[in-house]
Amino acid sequence: VYFIGAILAIVGVVFLVLIPEKGNHQGKVKTSFNADVMDGIKYMYQNKSIFTLFILIVFTTVFAHPFQFLLPIFARDILKVGEVGLGWMMGAIGIGAVISTLVLASLGDYPRKSYLLLGFMGVLGILLGVFSFSTIFAFSLIILLMLGICSTGFNTMSNTMLQSLSSTEMRGRVMGIMTIAFGLAPLGSMP
Image 1: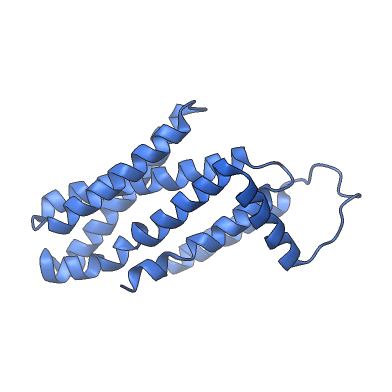
Image 2: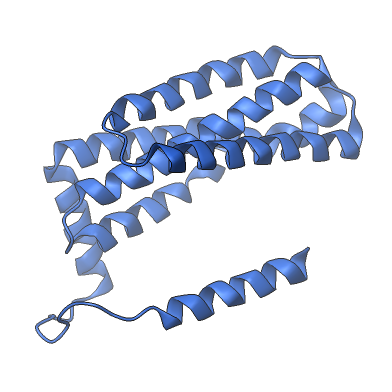
């Protein structure tokens, strides 16, 4: 699996290199990394929609997404299904992620993205609460499938909205800051 993952990563890099560049890069001014980050933070703070979305993403990243770090404990101590059961649990999340991706792709340019995003976030919180009390393996698998749908749906919608709300010249900076924010997930797993 690691070799397949490595090969697919290399294939991805090759395809990225093959993408032709567009636009005029002659008038670009070179700036420092710190200046770009600060410009991105200022831009996000000044744009109320982007800043609100950023806060929602950080909140969800820190408080909801770390649930996967606890799955081995649920598999061993609560559901008592061991490693094989843990594999089924992770698989259920993965199947939910695929379902979410296919459904969102079929929606096209859905006009009510913000409602869909808030729906995913709300249902994600409810499902986490329900999962935390579940002691039945089959029921837990169903909840985890739905968690995969909501978690991936939230991530996809938030990224889509961030990119569509950001101006062309600031989009890279905003997405870079969001990548840093996604790195905060382990902070939520410590408590």
